[in-house]
Length: 228
Image (tube, rainbow, N blue to C red; front, side, top):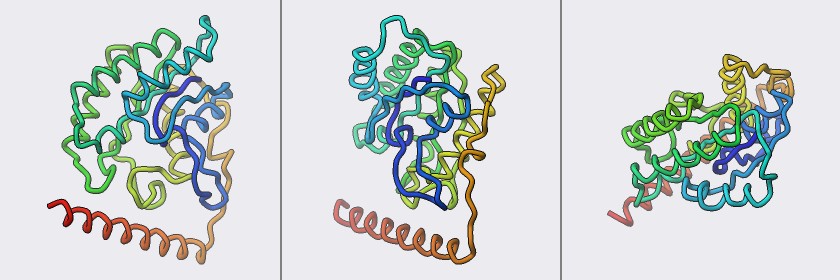
């Protein structure tokens, strides 16, 4: 399995109920019982995928190497750029999927949650998701729709990065979709990430989440006032 993307696909971060924050793509590979080749990098944009990650892969991989599954989840950083160009994004997203098609038997692209980021722009996110779906259709790539993905248990207070259990949840959805394509799940990520919660722990987690949420909102309000 081969994956390109940003920090969401790269993974890493805080434990949640003792579950390590690992990439949804890594959980998916483990669920398929497949070797995993990750090239995602924190903070990456679609330009980074095409101009940095793919060339690094070409330098490291065998020219004849093929993969059962190629994954692309990119756009959360692009959307927050003041100079974001949707047409340019779609062109490079299409180019990245085209490269994966040459190397992989199956392709998986992911859309972006509509609740992503603060302040959020649902209209722009939906336009970007439509671009993702168009490029996916051109290469017969499966699309994992994450438009409605979100909430306290699966997203961090920044409304951008999934929590440890959020990464597991995305992988569970991905594996269910891949099963319809003939890629059988060998073991569910939920079975690989057993955990138990406590009332005290849930309360502490809720208070921490609320504190970080308010802290972020205050920072955004200050920034907004500064640049009005």
